[in-house]
Length: 257
Image 1 (cartoon, rainbow, N blue to C red):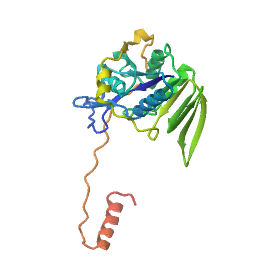
Image 2: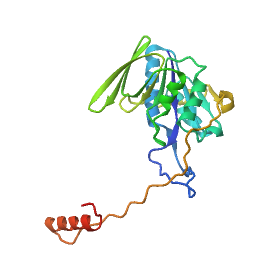
Image 3: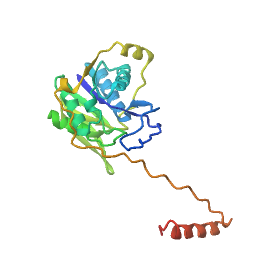
Image 4: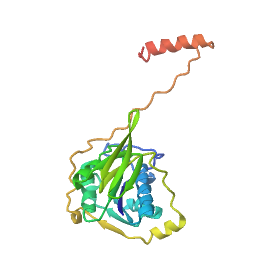
């Protein structure tokens, strides 16, 4: 079985994000970069299918030179090879342009299943997987929490409000992974050493035949407004007195009641 896992490098969830003074983007100084957590679920599921059915796992990643670290992380987990799409024309790509570049890199490869994270934690758009499937002309099942593969078909479980939805699809297909699908493994020391020797093919927009033109553009980044300081109610030490003061403040200052 040939499996492809698309990954993205994103700021660590614990990183302190600061917006540039001119609003043109985020200040990347001092940020630790990691594999998108939802993509980790896709990589892990790809590796489990490889262990069950044989074959190989290919990692595809779009990003600047630093994204190679994320590709090597996936290779250290057990993937076999990688494709790094590195071109400044694609660094600010929207979901469509990203999916277009990924599709161009994948079209010439053999594949049975393509995994993507259900969304990236930086832009939070959740569109790349579905657009990728459309461009490749194959089915897609999103937000999958359980996957069973048998022969040329797959049965995927995804959550809906108050229930679980089970969808059957033919292969090849795109699966977008979410929390609950599995528990991603850690890269072992031998895996890290082997990853250094695994092949990674570097491609740019020209080699893929894509322009990198986005259909949407981020006009400006604006940080969230600063939260006002909290207020301690101490006018009266009794619970009744504090409650009365709280109601007064909610009515007269916050104006929420």
